[in-house]
Length: 113
Length: 114
Image (cartoon, rainbow over all chains, first blue to last red; front, side):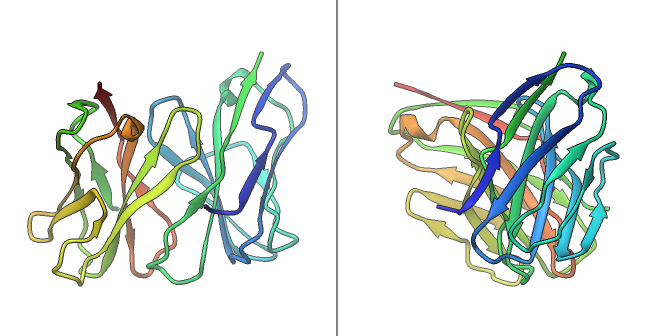
């Protein structure tokens, strides 16, 4: 079982609040990812990182931002949450080689009222 | 850009029976990797099986096996002796040799009937 952790699991919060979703992995993986997934739908990549101080935007445009100050930590921040941000957010990590699969966290289910 | 298509939004299977989930993809690359992931309700997405495109032999993991048809760009998942715990969303995913990102299909919801 993969050692990648996301907190909180569930969050219900009002519009306009600043939110940080936490993601940590203990596997020493260089690569980390954030996906957005609506219930029962496909995953869309919103951010990724190849290592410390490296961050890139994914295929799906997102108003969120990320940082990678430490290898094990890849938090995602929404400065001002809106109802359109309601979704599930999945964090993943992988080793550097392309053949290696991504390991996923449990996800954060976010609801903005 | 690569695309991954899962044409079956939902499938059902009787417990102990066999079911096959379809996946096709579009790519101009010759070297890439394919994965099947399982996502149970409200639980972690986990890797079921993976296939390297350069390998002709189909991957097998216990009750799970794939039928990889490179020329047809097809990558189906066969689940034998289905169990109640197999009920989940199944996602097919593609990654090219140079890239770091997975391209996911739309998913297939598998229901297992007791």
